[in-house]
Amino acid sequence: MSDTKPFPPGEYPVVVVGSGPGGLQVSHSLTELGVPHAMISRDPSAGGMFRRFPFFQRLLSWTKPYAPVARTEREYERYDWNSLVSEDPKLRAIQPTLMDGTSYFPARPEMERNLATFAERAGLQVRYDCAWESTRVEGGPPGGSEARFVLATTDGEYRCRFPIFAIGEAQPMKPDTPGIELVSHYVDTREAHTYADREIFIIGKEVSAFELATGFLQWAKRIVLASPSPTKLSVNTHSLVGVRARYVQPYEDHVLGGGVIVLDASIQEIARTGERFTVRVRRSNTNEEMVFEVDDVIAATGFQPPIRDLADLGVVTYGRNRLPALTPFWESVSLKGVYFAGTVSRSAAGLKKNGVPSNSGGVGGHRYNARILAKHIARTHFGVQIPRPELRADDIVPFLLHELDHGPEMWHQRSYLCRVVTVSPDDGVRDEGIWPLAHFVDSQGPDAVAATIEANAQGENYPAFYMRRGGRVTEHLLEADQRMRYDTADRRSALAAILRELVGSEAAA
Image (spheres, rainbow, N blue to C red):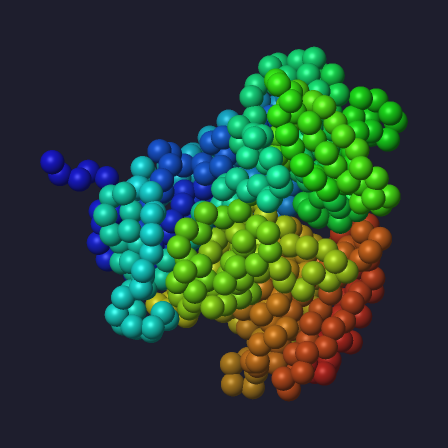
């Protein structure tokens, strides 16, 4: 019988593993750049984790159908955290066209349709129901021109120079707690009504734990959430890290004394007591032991990427989530040629100025990482010439401030991505596009300036400029603006003064 599915086993320059948002975005971006590749996925259709999660249906990332700017404008991406991005207008802002208007947080099925629609309109070919199982290296050391990564799958073997793993973080993770094997994980949660009039103990106090607690509020008799560290709220971290505002009702009920208990406590032991569970905890702040008898225990203890045998090949991982250690361009620091896309790209943490992390764990952040990754692979490994438009020296100031006002990349990925302009006697002034800020700060190169947006400890957003001159990088910060509008006369003057040493007095025009 002939194989009618796309990308039969064989050799390809690049193989993308995964058909969630990360895989779809990097595949589309590689296609735009003319880089041949195959895409395989264990799933039966596009969507990745959004085919199943979040359990209680609505996403935490918003898409605002009626935003201050038209959907056709690039700036609209600032208000749409869920659509994938493209140079093709018909592939932009798909998510708002699929929403029913009851919320600006898409429902899970709406997000799934968003990704499937993008794949269909973009003509992305995916070999579905093809699960990656193991990996080996043949032909020479990784990164060499003769080396090939061999991906064994349920359909056969794929050989490539550069695999891109867009595998998400959907592998359930449980800590080494006595009795933890007796309880279910977040992924095993039943329908909410089956928890009616029951006492529920949730291990964990991050987003998934509070999502469950929110869904159980109207059903459960009592809810306990416990983990050793205090709860972080996203409004305090100024990012997607921490419990989002949509899920703070259980926290408020705890503070006001209504049926929810939020504990800073380590779980000492879980045991079965007939049809119920006994959970013994030790409070972090007082060392007091407490015992809870409950009907259900759910481990909302997180996920890790299913990296399979990549660690055995040399991919170094870190932390309890076993995230791969990555370069600023999302390549394994220890195994050359292996790249990652999607939520796993959050492993390249960036500068984390003022403690603010990247937004790479969400589609609104990692979609831009994937575009940059595709350009990096195309330029570095396949000799693709990425456009570098020429600018006049007196255009730099208005160009960069306009980008900070309207460019979605720096708004979504503050102090993580930046717009770079290089200045050299031989090549003139060039717009280099969007780069990882950590790469710009740590790399050598021609004189240049990188523009980004940062947030201070008070949550105020301000323009930040990093100027490289003679190999030395200096940091320059301008005043914050609550409206995030930076193209003003006073900031033009301030930026011109900063750049005068780099490009001369023309920058003040």
